[in-house]
Amino acid sequence: MVYIGEILSIGVAFSWTAGALLSEYGSKRWGNLTLNTILTALALVFYLVLFKIATGSFVPAAASSTTMWWLMLSGFVGYVLCDYCLFQSYIVIGARYGLLFMTLAPLAAALMAWIILGQQLTAISILAMLITLSGIGISVLGRGGSHKVSLKLPRNGVLLAIGAAMFQGIGLVLSKIGLNHYEVSATGAPGWLIPFYANFYRCMVGCIGFAILMYFRIGVAPLRQAMHDRKGLMAVAANAIFGPFVGVALSLMAIQYTAAGIASTLMGMTPIIILLPSYWLFHEKITYRAVIGAVISVAGVSIFFLG
Image (cartoon, rainbow, N blue to C red; front, side, top):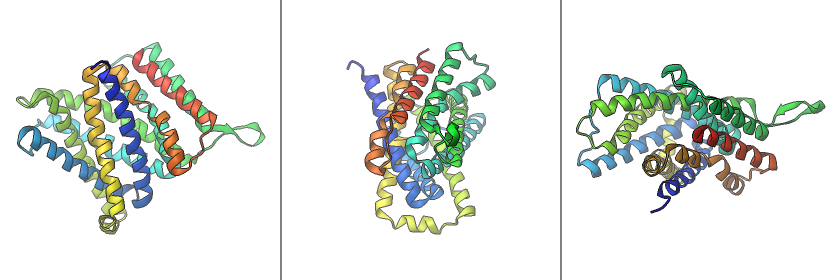
């Protein structure tokens, strides 16, 4: 089929948008830690079912100690730190603005790759960063008293969203390193399953990390209450499917059929796609500045990948 990679990439964008909206709903209903603990646990179950169907075994391919170290580190940064900040930002500023700030994640990944892997930052990359930042600025900055520029959103929500983007970018680079080691050590395993195996270990670290945080910060009582909330459980199950399961699967398929830059650009359209659903579901006001800022921010990411 012509443009199958592009179609899959757009599907990923819609899948991640649905996941973000469900995450905002679940975070406000249950709280950040309870939601993330159940979400990552359900994602692990879905992965185990996939492994059983694909290979006849629930057990993922064994990994070397070096591989496990990198995957565990990326899981801690990419799941525990990133998702904690991201879901908390959904509570404070909503999924629409949270996803807008997540357009900074590729830029954070580029900076991390420059520091750790020695990958060079081109002039196009720097231009893309500036355009993305300007788009975010247009959306979230406005005139305050005495015509001064002021932040239209709660500062703690903005800092949480920026932190989530930074942690996701760093986690992506760490995941890449771990995945490279995994491909060498997991001999005999189906090649297409390697990313799923790697993400299973990352997700496992995330689940353990969130469970520990939940136990020491709020206890297990909210978890027991959530288990009796049928409507909430249906929402989090759908979230697990749209986010870490189907979203990841479609993204891996997409880059097999089209260039990674094109796929990443189309997947990054979530800040634009989420505008109308946020208005319908959460009655968030859509302004011309918000639309223009989201478009400019996504355009900046597009230049970053396509340049």
